[in-house]
Amino acid sequence: MSESSPESGAQAFREASEAAARDLADVSSVELITTVSVHLLSAAALRCGLAEDGEDHKDLDEARALINALAGLVTASAPDLGNTHARSLRDGLRSVQLAFREASVFPDPPGEGPGEKYTGAVT
Image (cartoon, rainbow, N blue to C red; front, side, top):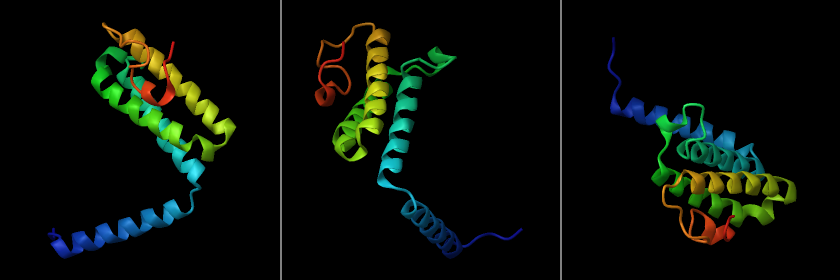
């Protein structure tokens, strides 16, 4: 069994980085933004307790951060995404914002919930 040297580890990292850059070069901005948004949306839903075993993963502090990030991304990128993509992401965002409100023992006042500084009050 041979040990790897720091130089071989650095070389492997460079090669992996170059491969990732080549892969990203083949992906459109709309696809990349949508994919990242879906990951944020899924993670936020999980942290709001919406999974099958939801209580095991529920963490509203984490959900708040994820929803804020998602709201900022969706709001900022909506003009570039086009109506179809932006509408479905906004619908998903609204759903997790409402789920967060329902999961909160002491819900935030309207307009102060996660992401609402970007989207306006969600009711």
